[in-house]
Image (cartoon, rainbow, N blue to C red; front, top):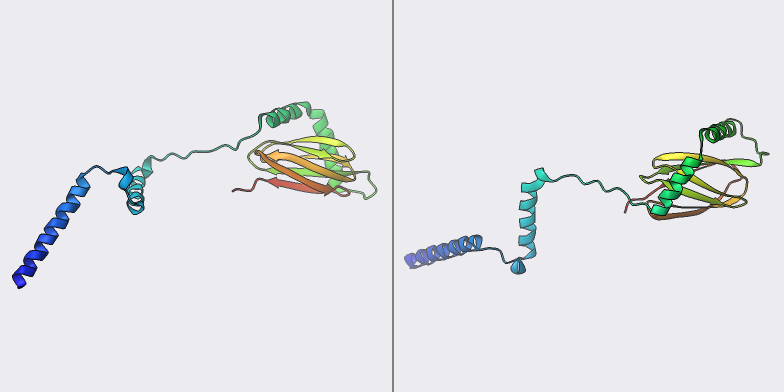
Length: 174
């Protein structure tokens, strides 16, 4: 009886090992691969090719019209205007007076895309703000609607500019 059990066990082992060997040698039929097998194949393939993987940098998309408007506004701001604006900003930051008719709007762009911020209220302004940069403008005190696109994502808010204000705009990652 023991011989029969040993013989039966040996035949089963030989049969299953031969079957596994045949399965390994046969080409994989992609329609019959289980999820577990697919994951195993992908893991083996990824470890073999990990040294060959190249890092791909995806630059955020910008609207062509927005980019053209940004370039035009940046060209229109000459050195003389920048110096006058810088002097106004410094004077406002160092010695702001509540009775002034103007307030400072400083906008910081914390994204990888250039943007044009439209400021609409008593008067309207278009402010070009470079990627990872900032720009400032002196505006009449009042309530303003700020709109623009940050890497093709719409930004819109209403701000009360009766005092100096810093606005930081950042594109949140998905």
